[in-house]
Image (cartoon, rainbow, N blue to C red; front, side, top):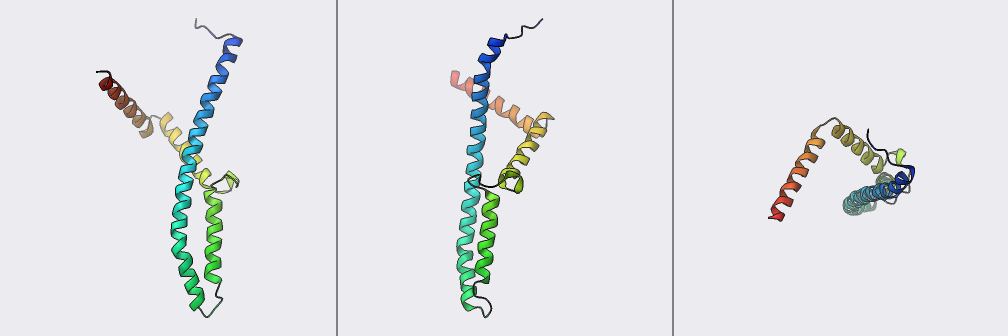
Length: 137
């Protein structure tokens, strides 16, 4: 019959599991923040020349001179909300966080079903074992 840990042993395991879970959450948050920074930077690079173009359109337009620039500013606010760089918007409201969560869930389901992510993990483990074996020589 397998040995089950006593209550005190279980309590001793909880902090290490909690720290491990906290570290995993931290790594996920760091990776997601880097993706958000990349998206934010890409948006800024795209919006810079667009703002000049919108300004030029406004200067030479016979209609409302600020129309194109105001639309660009609206686009900037919408993408700012979607990127949610500093987690100031609700994740359920259609943000990059939600997209990342959906992708993560899809990968977890694929891994559990033995799909391509599980095969990739197995391959990475085999490569790591080969590298450790080479290092040991």
